[in-house]
Image (cartoon, rainbow over all chains, first blue to last red; front, top):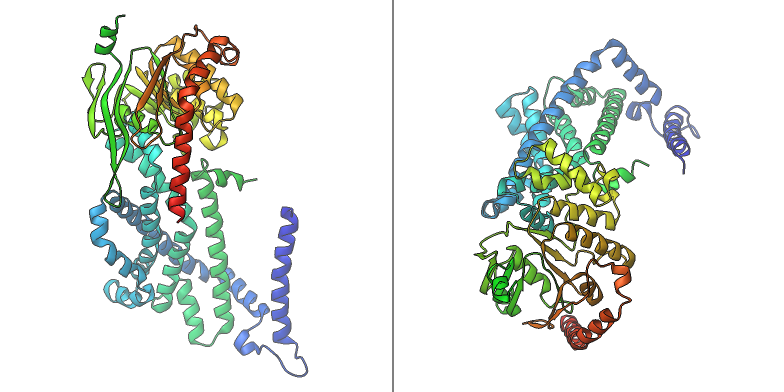
Length: 262
Length: 279
């Protein structure tokens, strides 16, 4: 399928779904409106609301806050995950000691931490950043750990025969290997950073996309809820596109990364 | 050079080397037993043996990547401790760094020694040209064919100018024609600057065509060196042509007479162990 045709189909699916939504909320079938606008709003109203947000400019502040939280969570979480993952992979003793605790922490649903973070760090951005970090950290941690552990032994032997010291081995072999695994989980970790920010905002804050949605829900403003969700979805798609760009730049040496470019 | 001199200043001497591994079930697996092998400076020695006979193990011992359970390893008269710094090793599998371009892969051996990166890259470019890949400097390994990757590997090892070259079935994964082309390339490079070469292969023809001396190992485990033939073919050699000569055929027949029974033994053992694993 060519790109243009694919795009056509994708647009068609979207238009059909929105059309159905509009139809079922506005046109009664046998005297019954299947989707009462009070519960389901209408596409018209949702779009109207989004345009209003952008025209009045109120949305920018919320977007900026959510973006800041997500970026901070991503950067701090990745850095921590990469460093500790690397350390654990090189120090088997440390990894063995901490293993049950890492598993416990990872198994814990992160939402339950949100109120605690709000209590510790207040209702500003840092409680949301902290929540995002707990999500991003583990994704990066496990990938980097695996990446270092699964470095090809032939590669390590070759590096040693080429005269590399332990430090050079870390820099030229283990680190690039770990980073390539980390980059391949970029989509997941960036997604989690956004999730952490929005869920944190939803549970208690004064700004951000999560706050916007929560406020709308509190006043049974369904159009506001859907509008917030739509903006959030678009926001995530734009970020995902950027990540794909960055990923291709960073992983040029990977076979599949360059094949996808065709 | 008298044989006495040769043994004293040999590039590689393995004396009575035994290599054993501890198995997961607590037993001990002896891969190689009482191996004696010496490679003179500038000599090309090929080790041939059936699959699983411990040829690569012996090479890893000479490289310092593995330690012998008994016996001694001497490199230019000095006992080997740790990695063999005077040896270059061409591996059987892919050993290029996938995240480095061909040029960076070749230059790295100099860069880790502290050579200025610009100088290292200039010399790497020269080496890539001499293995016929001057135009491929900026390709990543996955963009190169198997033969091209082996050429980069050869340049990566040779740029450090090792006095000993260890090769573990380096052309094994390549197709027949590419193997012969690579063999000729190797001989050209070796003629220009004679290094001591220890070349492991399961292909007897390749061994005779390339080497000054062919060493045969018995089927494993506890494999031993069971034969040692000097190859009387003149140099320079062309691998495509040399296979047609009578001397080549006579030697091949003679060595194959010994090797054949070991190959059959090795095959039966590996078939037997597979049955064992299945049951």
